[in-house]
Length: 434
Figure (tube, helix red, strand yellow):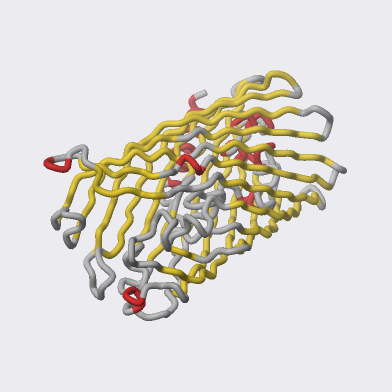
């Protein structure tokens, strides 16, 4: 028992250390991240709620742990290589065009590395214990300092860490249930110019907090070879505590640092997954996700000290729609060592022409993905995946009357060009003697 405890503790500490280096650019609608499993990415996340993501499927559905015997760990790292640029077009205020004219921003999105870590331990024939460490939300964009759109955005950063202990119970051969606790750290920093003129000082808003939520799910097998999973990740309220730093007076607020609070509710998600075995070699997969992004309406930012205590100082006017994602994929098990997979996904973004801004110029998009696994021996397997994401439909920016981000008298209209390349590597290890 001592040997088992030492191994388990060491593994969990290693997992936690790996995940703490995460930083990312959002790739799952607004500032959410979907790159949580290398196996899943190779399928465009088709079937992950039913278990196609291996041990990492517990991110979507903790009940999937009952598919993996003994003590297993999965480590993944996704390289995220986004590209996005904005070019001002007709309709942009001449005042704004004094800064760089109609010049292109260049790439405003930052490359990133996104680790994810999972441990699953079968306690007995009925009960599994697990731990997942992830970055469910992340964003990093930066526009040129002197630019036509500086009044709307300069830098935007979002960072999170979610520690998710889970437990699953195998009711019988066809039904499993799972629940988990989310303990999430969330940090954000946003800046923009205080005026549309060259070398204008910045206004910077930053804050962080810890929030608590839950995960839950079930898997059931109505027929042999058919696995269905339903997963739930709850909303997490973040009571952000931070500062509004002004380099110039804004709305009668003086230059300086002002303590602020803001209540941000991060959205819940419901997903449904399917794995259908056709033959010993071929498995079909599907997944559907709904994310309640419409929770993000207008987030008030209020003062927390001195004369501004309790007084609204600014707001974050998201006004998002709900987000949806549908994925289809297939796996081909060539032999005992090699498995190949591929998938297609379509995302209905919570952001459209009516609420799009320069911080997150997101749009509906298509995902094309491919991947493979290599079973090194009975205990160790390696995974690789590649995905290409590109937008479809109208992805332009129109910061004009009606858009919640519009600054009166300073319209900004621009064309947006963006895509993302994703490369992910992972390994799964099953420990002997458990």
